[in-house]
Structures are given as C-alpha cells and as structure tokens.
Image (tube, rainbow, N blue to C red; front, side, top):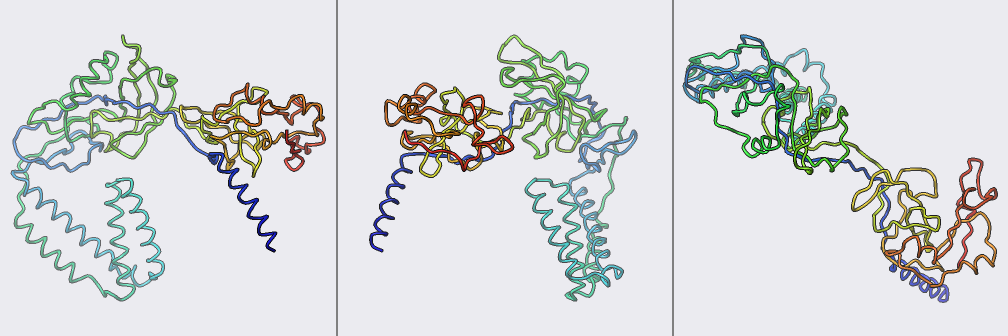
Length: 460
C-alpha cells in the first residue's frame, strides 16, 4: 500500500509539472459580428405645425402616431396645473375601471387560486423583461394587467370580498378634481395626414428625402455637432408625410465591405430595439478615409422619432465558429494552418478553417471532422512542444529508418514562436488522408473518417 501511494504521488507530481509547462485555452463556440459604428442623421419629409396662441400644450397622441387630416394634435391650457388635473382625473377613472372589472362576479366565482397565481407569475416575468428592455410603453399596459390579476386573486382567496370602498374613495377624489378642472383655451389640429412628432429641431425645412443627394460631409458634421437649432416659440410639432425615412452618416469605406442594396441590421444607442434597413448608397468624398453612407428604413416608432442625431451600429455579417486565439495558430509540415492541443499528457495538431478573423482571434468552422479543432479542445497558447510528447496520428507504424531520418535536431520547440519551418524540425506530420499519406484503409471506418481508437502513438 505504501509503495502504491508513493508511485501515485510520483506520477501525480510529474503530471502537474507537465501541465504547468503549458498555457492553454479551452475551445468554445463563439459568435462575432462585423459592425460599423457612426453618428447618423435622420432625414424625413417633415412639415412644421404652428399654433396661434400662447399657453401650455398637452398632446393627446404619442409621437409616431398616425394622424388624420383635421385631427387634434394638441390642446392649449393656461397653466401646467390644468394639465395635471385633467391627467389625474383620467388616471383615477382608469383605476376605478380596473377595480370594477376585477370584482366582476362572472370572473371571481369561477376563477381558481392556482390558475390566477400562475398568471401572476407569468405577468411578473413579462414585466421583468420589459424593465430590462426599458420598454416603458408596453410596461404600462402590462402593469394594469398585473394589477387586475392581483385584485382578482385577493377576492378568490377571500382576502377581500369586494372593492366598493376603494371605488367610492376614488370617485370622491375624482369629484373634487372635477371642480378644479379648467377647459383648454385652444385646440390645434393637423392640416394633413401623416405621423405626428411633438417637437421640432430647426432642420425640418433643410433636410428632406428629395435633397439627400446634395448632402456633403461638412454639412453632416455641422448637424452632428449641433443637432438642435433654435425654433419658434409657436412651433407645436411636426408631421412626417410617410413612414419611410433615411439616415446619413460618415464612415471609413475600408472598415467593411459595403454592398449597395443589401439588407443590414441596425442598432441605435437610444433604444434596445433593432430595425432592418437597406444600404441605398455609398458616396465618396474628397477624403479617401471618409464616405457618406445612406440607409433607408420603413419602420417608424416612438423611439425612432425622438432625435435628429443618433449613434448607430450597422451589423453587416454575423459569424459563428470555434474561437481560436491568434497566438496559438501554427502551420504543420504540409503548410496547413492549425493549433496544437493537449490530449492528456500528449500533444496533437488540429487544423482550422477560418470563417471570421480579427486581431485577437479567429473563428474556425464548426465540423465533425476530428482532424479539425473541436469544442472543448485545450488549445496551447504558450509553452514548449516536446518531441517526446508530440503524437503523430498515422494509419500504420512508420518505418524505423523513417523515424531516424526525420527525427528533430532539438528535443523541444517553443510553441509561442513556432512556424511552418520549425514545426518540421520537431516532428514529421503524417496525415491520415489518402492524398497526404497514401493508403489508410486500416484506419478508417465506412464513412471514410479516421478512427481515433486506432491512432498509433510514437515517441520520436
């Protein structure tokens, strides 16, 4: 027993010492997108809506809403308190409506506590996601749904019999506010059909879809540096005559392979949502490092009409593969690109097939071919490749003379500096394919793939 313990300890120390000689990185599946960042300027066909009287404005419609010709776009009040009173009355009436629907006998008499509880849990999860996405508009609707479910739950578990007292108190507060209510002094209507925006920035008459070809890099830089110009005090808002809009920005034409007419995914700094747009044009400028990019989109939402200038991220391509650090890449004797990996206490070469490359890493194609790097392989990034530890995957035992002729001059080579030339000096790589190693019928299955169990391990 003591001898066995000593042997186990001895070999454990040898194994630990071996592992300490190498720095490895586990191969994992990774995705990377080709992205281009720039400051973009929204361009739309817009017309300013002006009012004729002074006061405080209240807007009945959200930005981006479609408005018909002659519809009300704003009410004019004397003070902000008048707007608050009206808004509070609407809130309280909505609370009353929710409580009345929650105590409807047709619902409470048949509802089961476990069922309502499960709906509450689902609604809670939905709200948590909306908070993370900062989707306040949808969050407001889901909050009302959650409140109704919780009110129903209180009744079905007999914690409450009804909400008549709460309804009575809310109606009393509504009556008090009604006595304070003052009507608006003026109404402003739309003079055309379109999409309403409740603010102006001074560029409505200088930026349009028809004049987009006249844009210069200097003009775009001027707008980006000053996205808000002084506007009239009587400006109520503006109308957009269609849901289509364009965006212009300045990019480095060498930063990516831009194809006019191709669809791209666009992300904005102001909203978590993404849209699909089309690259309309790439316009060259006098500066070879600057080109004007024009993209178009037909999605119009509240967030997309809040700014004239926004930080934009265009996603051209999205790649997925096995992540391989650049410092680990080497070449074998056949000039095949790959990496060295640890197999227990042995080292083997695995090929890579790049699908995406950047300065820090490459993504290799995901394949079932065992001669290529696979997920969870321990890729060696630093350390010395010892000839005694390197394993050649062959179909038959090489001749002794061949081993002697091809034996390395040195016992070890530093993997961090190894290239095609010094890889040959460490060991001769014998591939298991017909083209590279001749007949391999003894080491392949019916599919033609090499069987790892028949691999012959030879020390130099």
